[in-house]
Image 1: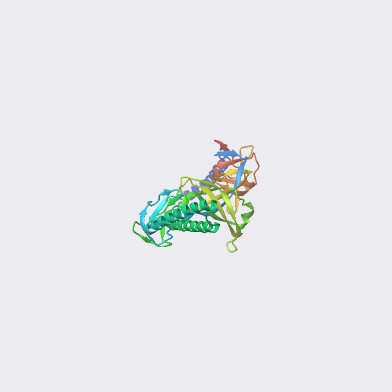
Image 2: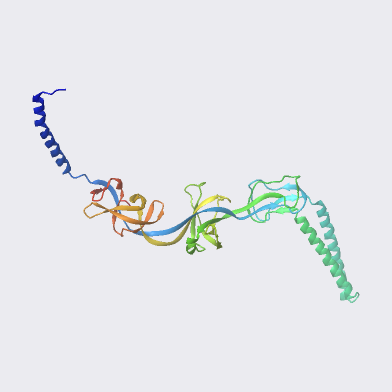
Length: 349
């Protein structure tokens, strides 16, 4: 393609002018200061802080057993339904004991007779009408019949199965007419008024554990609900494989929401102390370093590296880098650079 001489001449004359105008535009744009960034800030203050040890624990019943039969008999009556709440001493199952009932009546009659004979001979002995040895023999007979009566009552009691403690029953495993033998399971019984929570803690925290420490537990079954209790016992041994110690805590469970076998997240609280605490959103984490933007007196910011400690819900402890009274940017940090000017629209609480 060929261009005329006049076109080329016009191009060479106009090109420097265009370059000059572009340079002037850049100079004018570079001289204009950027608008202050709109942010929210807060003043860093010391506040109460409690370090926590986190772990996973398994819930266990305060008391738990499988109710079983002691003798070979036939079930006459079942006095409970699945999931019933029972008190200590409530009769759960009656077993047929007609032979034992007859034996009890016979033993009771023998004891009454022996007792009457002893009372009569006691009167005769007081009048010196019979020898003392005869009275002693009758006393032995009376005591033997009483022992047989007690033994019969004990055998009969084995045929009436009662709850050894208050709790909630599981599914019943027998029906009227079932032939049970020693060891046959009747139902499970759990006392869940208090939950024993067992969890493992690394041995590094052993010195920070003492009975009576407050704990908080949560379950995925009840989102947003906390269950509070305290450390009851610390195991006497450290597991040589996991290098952890087992801790048992007690959790009151009046509403019976927690059940044995549940998995709970546990937080063990250490004694309260004062610490500098900032919101997590104010901290910018880059790899292993963290920094915040501190506000200067001229409403510009400077980037400050900080050392972080423990975290809790939405907050983090600052160990180094800030002092009480420093004002930092909480919201709006993504648009800031070192030296940026800011406008604080609403101080964070």
